[in-house]
Image 1 (tube, one colour):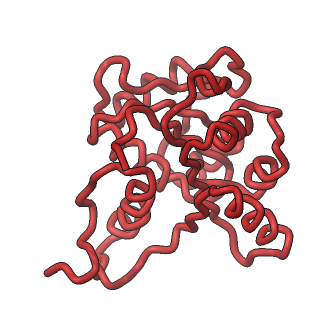
Image 2 (cartoon, helix red, strand yellow):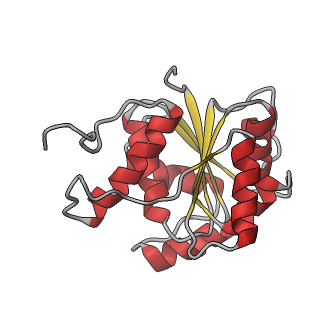
Image 3 (cartoon, rainbow, N blue to C red):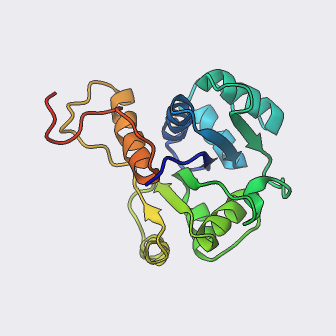
Amino acid sequence: MPTPHTVTVALTGASGLPYGLALIRALVAARVRVWVLASQAAQVVAREETDFALPAAPDALTRYLTEMSGAEEGQLRAFGREAWHAPVASGSNPADAMVVCPCSMGTLAAIAQGMSDNLIERAADVAIKEQKKLVLVPRETPLSAIHLENMLKLARLGVVILPPAPGFYTRPQSVDDMVDFVVARILDQIGVPNTLVPRWGETR
């Protein structure tokens, strides 16, 4: 699998925003171009789970995430929720892969039904129809039959359902270690080389 040139990262209102932010940092470190989409609910979650607030304005969010990740000029760009002229809104210029991390059950349901009421949903719809890699990182428990049916429907279309379930064979020593385990699995799915955590069978 070739390393993607551009990856769309969507942040939604599920718990687990640190996973998405760590993914952005890892993609930037791998010299991948990153397009970022953030829902309004993600801004609420950011205030609950982190020590900062995600800026609502796309330009401000671009500056914030560029500084946070150490991205080079032009390597990272955030788009508004209704920026219908954004590249991700069209199959003529899609990203090589898309990751929704964390993925709320509402977003997952909308993607499963082919909704395109905002840019996140439209970008996922484009990824599916253009047969690009789409990874959803759903953070919810317990899962209802509705959740599971939506996941099965998407999995049958080739969408990767990757719950953030860290392994413990790596002997994690911190929350960051557990976050890195999940981010490493996401990167593996989209073809981005990484050494975030030891592989099974490797000497620790």
